[in-house]
Amino acid sequence: MNDFTNFGFDISTVIRNNTTVPPEQWKLLRRLEIPNQFNKSDGQPLKRGLALDVEATGLSLENDDVIQLAMLPFDYDPLDGRITNVHKDLSFEGFREPALPISEEASIITGITDQMVRGQSIDEAMVRLIVEQSDLIFAHNAFFDRVMVEKHWPCFAEKPWACTFQTIDWLREGFTAGKLDYLGMQFGWFYDGHTALADCQACLALLAQTLPKSNRRVLEVVRESALNAEHLICAVDAPFDEKDTLRNRGYRWRPAGLQNGKVWWTICLDKEAEIEWLHSEIYRYEKDIPTQEVTAINRYSNRLWDF
Image (cartoon, rainbow, N blue to C red; front, side, top):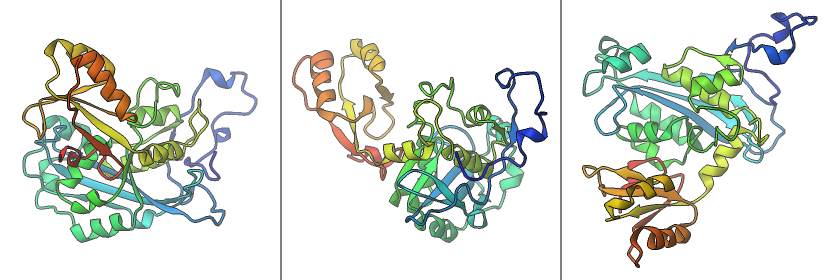
C-alpha cells in the first residue's frame, strides 16, 4: 500500500456503503492520476528513477525510428522499493521528425501523424541532463525502448536499465497478460494510453503497486532482477533437427542479417549448467560456446552482441 493513492476520488463516492452487491461481483475502474508523492520519506537515502517510453514509426528495431520520447523522474527507497516524490516538473515529452514515414498502424495506435512531427527535434542536452541525474531507467518494454533511444542519444548506454514487462512473472502473479493497459485495469485504473508520457505515468503507477501473490512491490522485484548478473549463451552451429528442443528450452533465433546472428540464444543465471545442457542434449560432444555477461548496463541493448 502507498500513503497516497493514484486516483482522484474514493470508491465510496461512487458506490454506496449499503449496497447489497458484494465487492467480488463488480470492479471499479478510475482514471489514473499520478500523485506528486506516493509515500512520505522516512529520511533514508533515496535513489532517482526514470520512467521512460518511446513511440516509433513502427515495431522494427532495425528499421524504424523514434517519433516521440517521454521521461518522468521520481525518487524511491532502494531498501523496500517505496516510491516517494514524483518530479512532474522535471518530466519531458517531445516529438522528433523520423528518417522515414510513420506507418499507418503506428499512427492509428499513437495518434501521431507525419504532419505532427515534421520539423520537430529533441534537445540532446536536455535529454542528457535528465538521464545523468538518474540512477536507474525503467521501461515497460526495455527490449524495444532501449535499442530505439540508443540510436540517437548515447547517454542512455551509460545507465543501468530495468524492465517491468520482462522481469515480472505476471502469469504466476495471477495476470493473463503483461500489456501495460491490461495490467492497469487489473489494478483498478484506465488511462489515455499510447502517448509516451501517459505510458510513463502508467509504468510509474505499476512500479508503485504490490504484487498479489508474492506481496512484494513491483519496483523492488524489478530492481532486484536488474541488479542480477546473467549470461548470454549462444548455441552456435546447433543441429537443425534440435531447433524444437532449443525453442522449448526458451532459446530464441537471431537472424543472419544481424551482428553475430544466425544463432540460437538465451539468457540465464547459471552459465555452467546451461553449457553442460547444450553439450549433453544438443551437440552431444564438447564444443566452444560463446558467452557474454549480461548486466543492467548492457541488458536489452544491441551492445550485448559486441563480442
